[in-house]
Length: 264
Image (cartoon, rainbow, N blue to C red):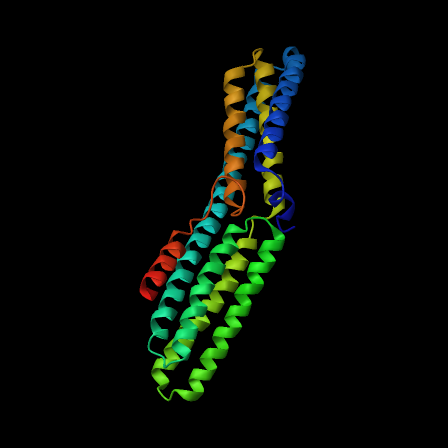
């Protein structure tokens, strides 16, 4: 399972459905708890409280573990945007050391490449636009590499040409890394297990309230809201192209402005 099913589901609707399920589970648990209230002694209540605490602890562990996974993936995506912008900027600067006419052609290709990389992010979840921008990126990469090989044949300054080729290779590698990072989701099985444990935990909480003879509506509803909010945040962080939380492209935008300023 690669996360594509949950990736395509609207996070708000998923969270709303999960909240309804948790609320119904609490009510059902409370109902069964009230029915069993008279037939359970203090020792049984104590044993149930231990089981309930263990399941809630497991839920907390899973929430923390999964949240840490999504945050690390989100940070990796942000870092890759910065690294790609730095690599393209370095390639642009080193291209100024190359002879004409290759220098101007490479500079123009790099300007176009920055625009295409921004369009790649702005494409969002539109598969057609994603394919188009990805194809454009690879086409410009091939053109840049052709220019680099042409310079290497004509320019005998091995150090200058070698430094540019090294940076260009890094630019191409970072494109592949960003594609991989975009597709690197938390496995669906973990998210589904998280939801299952949440349902079980709140069902046991409702059952415990029933054994006590009183359902604490405010407390149980607050628990459900908090759990759903954390799961929604996890799913939103795990989907960089949809939802409320986006990967900032400021470094790439600043690079485009800097390149255009240098050109002028």
